[in-house]
Image (cartoon, rainbow over the protein chains, first blue to last red):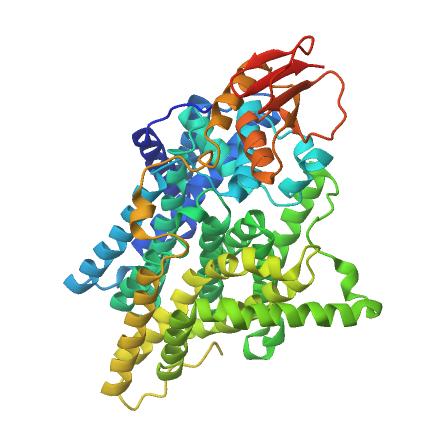
Length: 453
Length: 121
């Protein structure tokens, strides 16, 4: 049924992808900490692999390890010819981690190893993998093309043809790089994404706030077992969490200091988020709305730059998809519910969604929600609080989207709400890390840092 | 301030504890158990799909006739990819009919395979 590829082969290839991505990523990450640079290197490597795969298929070649390796080597070698910016003073002055920080980081790494063991316990099996992401990825890998029928065949309507292609392309290009489709070994891509996410979260909080708080934020992120769980292997949730983390950190960096590097990072991260899933596009648009709504807090140029770095990648990605596949109607949203004639029906559906949320979903996560509420109530505000409104609005948008579903809204909430909301946890970990640092390192009479001004 | 820090630390411990004590739909032991869940609801379906895969070219269209339930279709489409897999009620010419769980009963042109039969239409 599938090829046999050893997990060791996939691990070696993933390590090579990370190295190949690290070299070009150095060009726009000189002000970042080492863990962040590693995370960006992983993101760059995977993106380059997917792009190389698409490029080879576009000229009629079959992507394979030699061709993909050569393409990545070419980009990595080319990036060495470009003069790298010297590390910024901020990056040079980063403190050496304390033994406690190193210990916590090791515990976080144990969380990644734990998930990696689970990932290889069996082939990816969840329905969304079989019917959507894995089906598309396997079809692309086996045919060495992106067949038009993935978008326009009525027989595949249930595979959500309108979804973006980054996840299927990541899986198919990895399969091409290891010369086989093995659902057990390919699942290692997911702990790889987890490791990248944890690296970016801990590195970012460590750089912008405090290394110990960064390590703790990374620990919380790595051991978020409901997110890094077997039912999410093979789906878009874990890569979605990663791209949202990249967007969030780049966004907060741009608000702090507008420079070419931060602009590049925000553009790249916004593109990745849009290319992963519609929720990524929505998140980017909510960040954009935050900038527009609070533009009087920012310098005029900064607000315009941030808006452009968020909007242009989303528009470019939408245009590229339109050119690739033409118009593909979404199958899951009943937009006509927004028409005035159906508002009563919409209100009734919203009521059913609210009842389900407060009777099942909220009690199901009561302990975690209680902990978060206490944490937010007692800790000091930090620079990362700029993300609070966007993620809060995103959760509300998920509930509203369930009410707009073409399917039963209660079924929609039951099947997806908790799963997609959990993808926001690494972004929430940035806020937790920022607040931890503000609370534990501030003097007793400090008022706490206010959100960006 | 000390109380604030204590409550902060406790709330973080509570959050981490909530992850560890309620890790989603499955428990720790089950997470680490090595097994193939794709076809465990009907293990015979695997040998049937393997036979269909071997008996049809990659570019073929295959109409799958299975017991009711979307898992049969989704798993069939995934395992047989990149073949075009259609549901039972689809009318197709020039493709294959793969029937699971039934005997060919002398149907002309049908090839018996493990778990069912395959017929070129």
